[in-house]
Image (cartoon, rainbow, N blue to C red):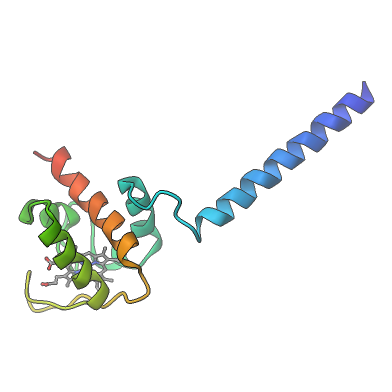
Length: 123
Ligand code: HEC
């Protein structure tokens, strides 16, 4: 009896350890970069939310307004990706967005997929 409790405790520890290991891994590697949920996750972890909110304008336009303004196609995906990476202004006003050179194009595209997923919900 004692032995089986011991084994259960041991197994629980093993599972708990492997889960926490998995969690620390996901902060560095995004397994499914094409998923819009992964995009949302990255938005929450990066500085985007300092200037953007989902519904309301902050320093930058709301993500919902961005989704409304642009059609989802390759040209706009490329244009918006390079805007996020290189920064700049002129599309919404004179306040510039800071550049994000450390974010890869693939990750930026999954962020954009998240932003464009707001379009569906609001139409
Ligand atoms: C320092 C504030 C700031 C931060 C941080 C910021 N943005 Fe922006 N963002 C802006 C501003 C201001 C604009 C409007 C720029 C313009 O008028 O062209 C903007 C515009 C955008 C646009 C629309 C670009 C266009 O040309 O229409 C997207 C998409 C966007 N931001 C995504 C992001 C994402 C994703 C992040 C995080 C990686 C982020 N922003 C971080 C301020 C910010």
